[in-house]
Length: 245
Image (tube, rainbow, N blue to C red; front, side):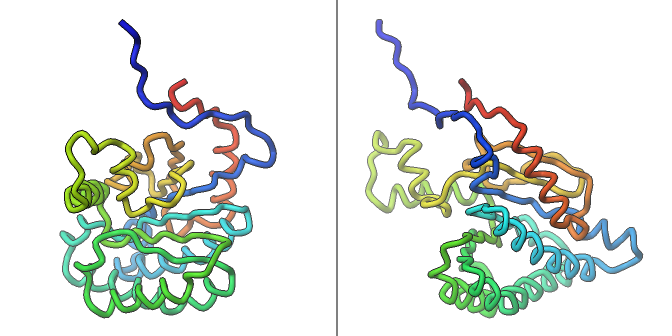
């Protein structure tokens, strides 16, 4: 009987100085509350510091030639946090999107937001829509903000779209699901960074990160700066990516 092989995994190619920078970097921005606690500050102040930390990372990623930067800003599980903290997170993100859109547009960044946006307050949805529209022609960097995001919910949404599109069970495969993810037209993450010391994905890009390299560091997100990003990228450049081969 002939051996039936599954579809080929991505091809591992020899590395050179020209391709050591990952095309897609995804970051789990963890540690805002612990950063604040260690300084005798409120959780709200920690989240505000976390929002401020995003700007230099976006700039440095763009300078280094990263094509896609995905930031885990607010998970669907975060709704379980105390109401005042959730409200602070929503307000901070909405304001940050409004404040940063002009610079993102000037720097050629395109903003996309991943998640169930229809579950967000109207003001937040409006800020997101305006930023997406204003930066739609950006070609230097795609900035994905995962907001009200869940990897499992994303897979459920993709499966529902398969049904809505009339696919038969035998037509549903990896390609059909991948084509209906929030990130359908983007390269999969090459590198996933998590700050704050924990070593888990926390439901972030669980399909897309199947062959990603992982980089964990103890640094809390508000202290993760351009130098820390360079260190993570340098570590990535030493990895041998075999994709199961």
